[in-house]
Length: 410
Image 1 (cartoon, rainbow, N blue to C red):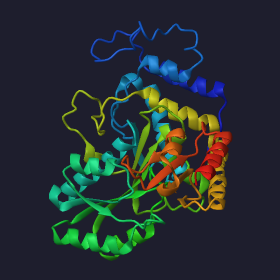
Image 2: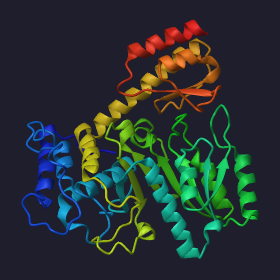
Image 3: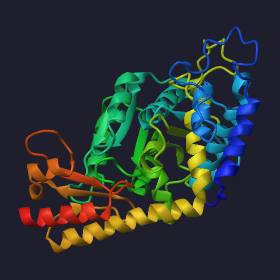
Image 4: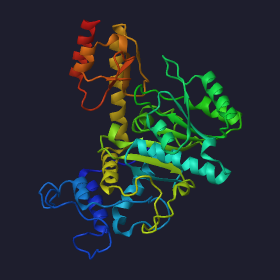
């Protein structure tokens, strides 16, 4: 996992070169494109700070990245410069962060992790329908009770059955007996095909699913399944903090990943990343998108090229070594907080490779939760857990004050 750190000037120069390869609305005779640069009354491009901000410059130029540009088909020709930046971003994520083979993946920058997860479900649903003549009522989405709400949302949209697996209340590990019981029950009810979603960090706990027992179960029982990894939270931290991770494309049983830049990378909202092995995007082809060169394979369709540029800029500015140092510092600070909680006798859950600590609700008063904006697992009168996420804005002084207040309230 290595890529070179670039200076600000080097990053800016590459973005300028990409924008110069795009077709400008201002200087070309463009009559047929249903879009334009941003409204000049609000987003005037002669503002002095625009020239020194590659992202804002791209945002104002407003390139549309509709389609999937890692495919060989012709893409929208007007924005080929910034589309090349997005292709390079997908390649970097797939081959460096997720350790995939060279030129073996497709993907795009989605509206967020939710869309990326649903994109995976959509592709695998269509894969089973087209390759096995399956009907939707024979396909189930399998995920743990700690999984993101995009799983039931996607199952609902795609008219698929959900198989929700229980986890151990302390370790957050999927219960083997519950997996076996519920898959057998699903088969008895006519389910023949399974879209399995594993978590590379859940949103509430920072728990990471043990995928080896999951894979072994579906393999040993000779079940038809596809495995997608939701790394919306963990995708830009876990690979840097756990060198022994098997959540990558070297694991041949994993076919796709969701990553999300707006969390650990601090990119704008709307910067989810969907990556899948080549050969699968075709199952999401929208044939009716005749006016789009290369057609469309994505849920969202039109999307901002500036968002793809923002993630690429962040990754290139830090370089792999810079991100490794940053992400490991988050994990180390979280471990330090855990040691202080242990001294107070407070029960909590923490994966040592991640930056989330989730504290049993019985230790947190309503006043403490409100003062420090702690997030509960449920917005009812008696939450079972509250979480703390160590991010850039979380300063050590605030954590120290929290520990003092917590100690006083116990």
